[in-house]
Length: 254
Image 1: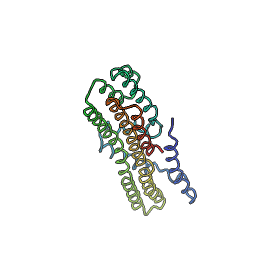
Image 2: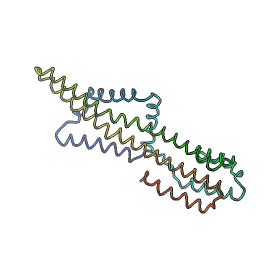
Image 3: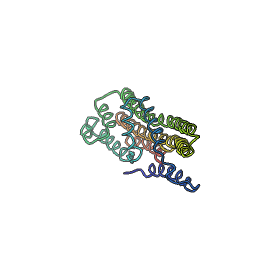
Image 4: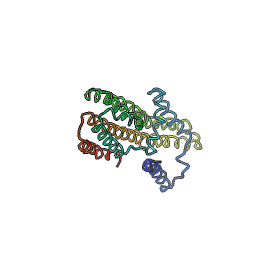
């Protein structure tokens, strides 16, 4: 399902710029300059490729689905499942949860529960899965950093495009017919650089970070639930404990 908020945000930003240009008497064609686009977008991509391994660039491209398509994890079904596991374990022991592993799709929850069933010490279990969360967070933040870095390069590349356009102007002062094209490239390149950074690249980076924080919160909730089951805590108290995470998660989804 498409995330209407993300799509609307980009469309609104671009429409505001194009609309303002039209209101001021400019034509839509004046904002579309192939030369400026090649300089800014090609230069930004090149600088970003130089800054990160190709694998990270590919992963950053794949991560766009998390920006424009809703795939947010609802904590409610997870909490209900964990409470169900708690009742089963309380009645028949942890070993009775082995059959439940076959129905769990989330790899983090499945691994946590499997280690608990295998009898891993709760403290070691927490340390093990928290380290996995750290690795998960680092990988996600590295992908978000790709867009943040590109957003830092784009305005500077835009300035380079502006300077190149002005050089073209200075070289053709004796030919007025060529001055307009050079000036257009100069100003449009700046718009492309600053606009792409602040309307697209940096917001995408922020969106990915928010998604990472939201996913981490769900993972922490899962881990807390599994360890609570392992410690034999009353399912009612487990439910109350996990509900706290739902309130925190709203900060990343509202």
